[in-house]
Length: 209
Ligand SMILES: [Zn+2]
Ligand SMILES: [Zn+2]
Image (cartoon, rainbow, N blue to C red; front, side, top):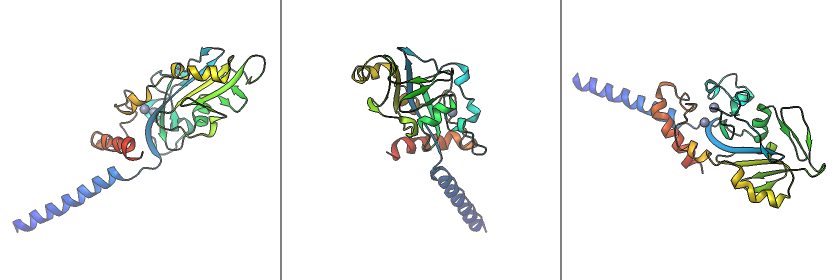
């Protein structure tokens, strides 16, 4: 009799453990959480994206139903240069349209109503992704620790390229490897978060690449 009870307990805990491990290790193709950096310069001046109008509520970080475009990729904590990516395959265009901007090969349209055209007067529009010139990153997927510079102003592409490292912050790596102060990483797994999140984050940052 005792043996049977022990055997049942063993059986039930094996199942429970299997379910738990499967739950944690199950690939979640849509839900991700990593960071990238960006900066926009217009006429030599950094655009201030740290204002509250550009920020997203952390409660929207890991929604799985009624996902709005703003939930996929956004800014938090009045940090205008750190991009939080929550849904896989989000693009730079997704981010900037959430911020009320559009851009293309020859135009940059901030959320103040202006349309800035490249090649008018002395001003040119350049994009640099991870230090290399890009024609138009709008449809490019934002990858972990990417660094995007959008530059509208004077100077040749070569001159601006030399400044990329100084102009775009590189804080994404740090935020990838620590718990988000905005706690926007903690509600993916409900009450299992403290166990599952570190495992899942580790897989995300070390396993996939
Ligand atoms: Zn978030
Ligand atoms: Zn984050």
